[in-house]
Structure formats: C-alpha cells, structure tokens
Length: 208
Image (cartoon, rainbow, N blue to C red; front, side, top):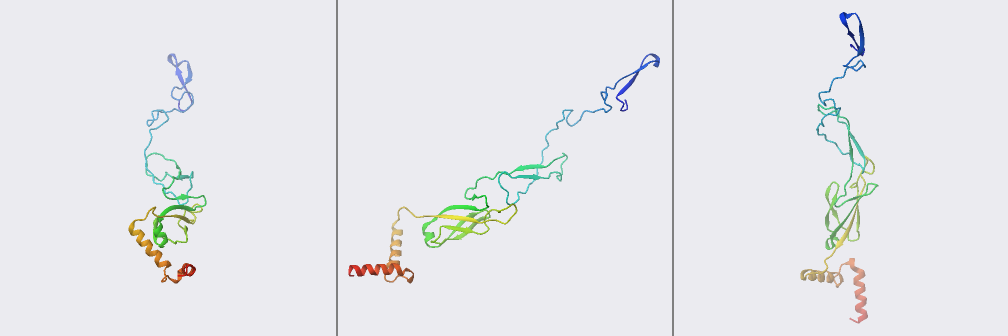
C-alpha cells in the first residue's frame, strides 16, 4: 500500500477497481515485522552481566545507590542499577545514629590493674589499647563511622569489663600475698602513704 493503508483490487479486465484494507499494515500505513529476538512476545530473554559497585563511606541503612551501567561493554541495552543498602549487625561493634561506634569487651582483670595493653576491634582492624585501672570507658578518636555522608569519621567508645577468676590457684594466692605485703608493709612505696599511715595507727592502737 506504500503507506496509504489501502490497496486497489482490479476486477474483470481492469474495468472496475475498488479499495480494501491493506493486510500488511491493517490500514495503519505501517507494517510491523515480528521481532526475531522475542518472537513477537515483547519480552526478551534475561541478559546476565556483572557490575562492580563501590560502597561509599558513611552510607546508612536503607540508603539507595544508583550505579550507571551504560558504560559496561555489553550487547544488551542496560539501564541504571539500583542497590538498596542493608547494614547487618556486627559481631563486636554497634553503630549509633551520630556515627559513634560502641564496643563492650571483657578484659583480664589483672591486665587492667597492671595497665597492660589489650587488642580492641575497630572498623579498620584490631588496634592496641593501653588500659588504665582508673578508667572503664575509653574514647578512640577517628575510629568511628563518618558523621555525615563522605564526612569525617566519628569516635569509637570502648567500655571494658575487668574479669577476675572466681577462685585463685596456689601460685596466684602466693603472688597475691606478696602484693599485699609489698603495699602494706614498712617498705611500702610513697604512693601508698594513706594505707601505710592507717596501718601504723592501727598498730599504735593495739600497742604494738
């Protein structure tokens, strides 16, 4: 029909002709061909492809990331990939809304008394922390989560729980007696002046 939507049909010897609807375009003037890829169903087979997406620092739970897939070398025409973020619970760390990361951990009670170093889990790996027997909460600057998207990191708060044995073995009992004697005896250091003065007053009270 050459785009007219109708074709002319000739009768006997071409004397009389009439028009009828074109069967190729159904009168619309545009003939449609069956798509070879989908056999006319309008749905092609799923195309498999792989894309790497970088998770930016500071993302929060339920954030939506958009990845541009048009640069991929694929025969299929790909649109944007949308990724919904779901932050799972960490084994040791807990994230606050303000970017503070909290960690509660048990430590050896004797290591706490002796101001020893212990390992603390952080988002950057395990780091050393020097204990102080006068403190139970420690702040690690810059070891937290970004306060804002792509912003500076917050802090990490570490709360320790000193653990002491329920019962002491023989060696521990001997060492403990030595420690007691070193802090309460006559040769105690100047740092234990209050305890030495108290024991001296008690001895005077008993007349010894």
